[in-house]
Length: 510
Ligand code: F6P
Ligand code: MG
Image (tube, rainbow, N blue to C red):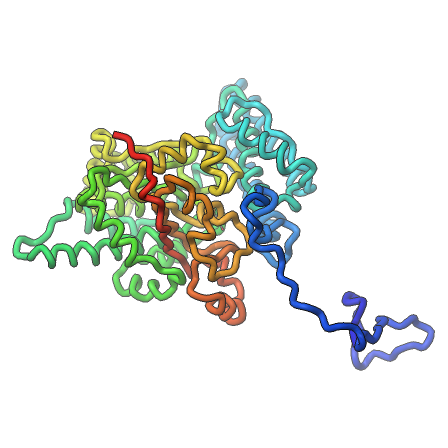
């Protein structure tokens, strides 16, 4: 017997039924029809049919209630925008010049307009030409793939990124507030509440790292391997403190997320569900012998995560595993906590000159200062380079990177290893779609693994949204689905996945 009206509920067992009422559900017997077949969907789409509105596997969209897209588009984004408006109001109240006040008020009115569009599920309109280098990229995507789409039925990734671009527009068309960052206060504040973990690392790494004299070469290599693995985990778990998820975190919550002790790290390695750490070490170890030894970090969050990235990058330089590190940040405020140039400069300067941690001892303060001085020196010597390409603040996934930003693709193809930090970068690498969890990383990232010149790509991500790939089997994910609902958004689990790269075809420049 098949039920044809799944929404019509049968009366509760003890409720009297009236013969005058129509039957609450109608059922037809379909016993003589063929059995339902297990029809395989057209997934993955053939590459020529893939486009930003049609990912290789089904997209997540805001109206999908089963996906984190739904809560994000319907609740989290309006909350984040509301807090951003509060921040701008606070600044407004501190401002004295009438010209600046009036100009900021207009920005706030535009934010209110964005709030109306977001909560009223408006259609995605083109971005106003505000002189940003990404306007053409945005409007091409909207015109080509998202005409008539709204916040809820466009793919989640695009709609969410679009909201941050519209937020940028609220300020970029102003006279005096073009570069205002509504998230800056939050970013600084969270770092200032991370004292324990910050000093845990600075007290260990203030002095340049060196091996004890009596070690053999093999022992030195083993010591380096162990340090590399621990620091990789520190860099990885630094990603769990992104501010878009942890609004109003207490100091205790921050501490537990940032625990950096050895025992803690051994325990957390179990939570790395797709774990290519050994392959990553083999890759990095090879670099020392190469002429280039260039590693790129496509950064995620400012503050504590950036600090962990820098400690890691410092070790890679000091140990000679890399000769140059290139950091890629965002050109404007993005997904609440992402690194901008201002955040980068703030971190280094607060380490060297700031008094951010009132309870710190003299030694702790000095350890932080020394590390900051060394990092600034790396910048002066060109060992560390900070960059910000417009492509990073678009709604395109990285499957489109070589097509939409060929200059950036060529630039990355000269790197020996490109490390993508965080959840959003992972979503962009994998087209943010419902690929089976056992999909190999190289398949999930498409052109970033198989296009000619694709560099080796590593994704270091704590899992904070639906897409999960690179696991040994689908069963691992299915078991967690059954036993731990919410495991995909808790940040408790992670992946460290490495692609093969196409080194044979890498374009090398002198
Ligand atoms: O809003 C959801 C999201 O885009 C998820 O990707 C993640 O939960 C968060 O925002 C950003 O995380 P991350 O800073 O690690 O990219
Ligand atoms: Mg982020």
